[in-house]
Image (tube, rainbow, N blue to C red; front, top):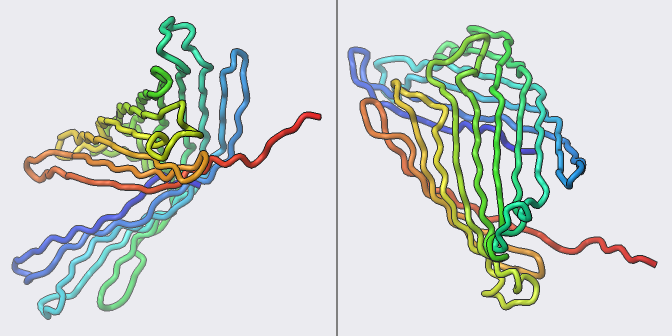
Length: 295
């Protein structure tokens, strides 16, 4: 089970006009989750092919509200759009064998490349538009339509340098200009492209028998993304830097801490630039559970 999308925002805009003083409130919440089951198969030359069957399900609510608060100058009113999604898709992946012998550089080990392709069939969308006012709730519109999500294509490579350094690079492409909902395209979407690269340092000789400080893993990375958003004919780009550390908490087990800082958008008419931070803590278990003894 994996989250695919997450909607969580609330925007308040104070307004004063002939109607009085009130707040325009725009709210969005919910998301889509993917349930999947997959397997892999070893091809000739030690290439690995993987495939999964994916099922998407979720609900997203959008709300537009006029709130007069305690004022008696007007009545509160709200429009709520609730979309429920469900549909199938598939993901295919390919990982190459170790191609470092083809490069001919002794310092480079375990050189591999990978490809991933994700396709989603038309997702059935059950939609309801309702109004909420002082006199109650009325369903204004309801029905079902198909939502067409664009395919996603990714490619990447990784290799080890002098055994201790792992270097990776990834590219992702998704043509959001092909997105359709109820046979209608959006003028605010364009094709997504993302480039990212990372570096990990791990003392290969001290993985199991080194001191605490010798077993620490250090990571850093950069990413640049041309997002799918087109606002006021302006492309929205995103740039991020990443850092992380893995600390041993036993043989083969690590406590991973990561941090990301990024910027998105730009200043301009009806535009703004965001600075965002993300932090995560996870535990990586690497215990030996099964061991085969030959008799």
